[in-house]
Length: 43
Image (cartoon, rainbow, N blue to C red):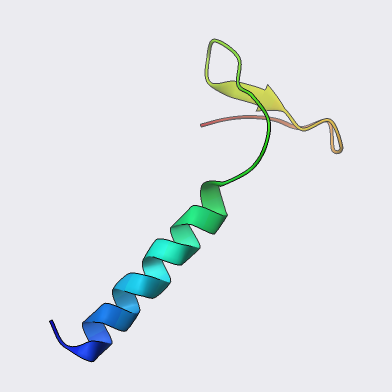
């Protein structure tokens, strides 16, 4: 692998972790309520 490929792989791996990481449990359907906004979403 060249340096550009390694940099791209590193950026993608860090951005995907930040995009999906959050606190809060999920219900039986894999969903949960954001108590700050009142929104409900599934994963």
